[in-house]
Image 1: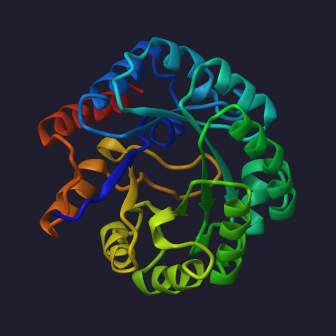
Image 2: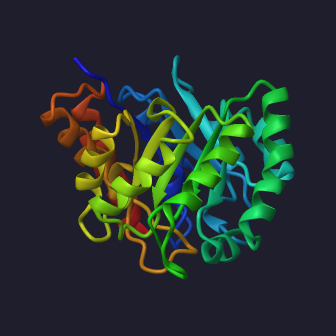
Length: 284
């Protein structure tokens, strides 16, 4: 059976936008439950400035508190050298750097132009690899930007090529505000595939306009076999006005399973984790 991997990002990308601080013990409990579901990779930390993303201020405590399951890689977002040093100290198994395909979002999200951001990531990627940590790349706003509107597919391909050249083992393509339609995703993937083979690409779709699963289907047709999901549909981005949650892991699992793909995930554990995630959001 064909395999699709779901990369669980709920504990980081899902929770980062929650306004009320969620207890560290609750975050640890969610990651521990997800660790039993069959994921190979779970993103559960972000070493950004607590001033900008207060929900992630306890990332080191979360990584210290979780029961690490054999065969699971626990990932952390690292925007700069300071963040990388903290991730290494907290024993993250892999790290991620995140660029944008649109100038407007890059300036709003990390206060840098695209060129400046790529320059900033180079030493981070190099140091991570020297420390033996795999580096994943994210590209935000691959089809639409809340500030600049439609994004040129050639611009996405350029950023993907730059992250590839830094040594990213996989690059996740994010429809950050969930406005991408299948035809736009199709055009973007056609351009990006010229820079990097689909086996090293991942899809990261938000469901703001109900297009996430249709976009997943387009990506599958282009050969992508990894998709980011957030349990319970948690998520959004503090710097992307109008961004609703990521496509939910359980919806993604059900959708690709119906198409004949195997995710290796346990649906019963996913259901429990989704209930836990939604309860955390309601309490927040």
